[in-house]
Image (tube, rainbow, N blue to C red; front, top):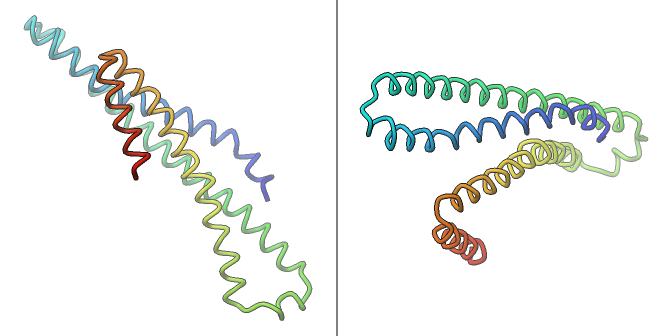
Length: 166
């Protein structure tokens, strides 16, 4: 069953890399805004402002394209894995003896087959989402420490307290 997943490992790594690029571009937007407000607008440099607006639009367009690509790769990977796993289940089912089906109800069989969808969803979307969330937390924590260590510690303690409480 997991042999089909091994074949998709390259696609999953691609999703992870594209997702990191999307998150990196997303984190650049506030830094970009800070630079424009603190430097370009204070100096009233209209030439630099025009360049920065064009650069900002390029960042937004690239981020949108990468985000769409990530969604497409995730959807196609989920489909391919699901198809492979469904094929494996069907092959296994038709090789079982008739006595196996006589002992079980149709609802029980349907429930077992449906659980495959939950496993596929957990493997693809949820696992990738959890890894991306972890990477994003590390990047944001590093960015917070770069701005102010005291504020970063307070925020992380409050977030940790909320996680422990809830």
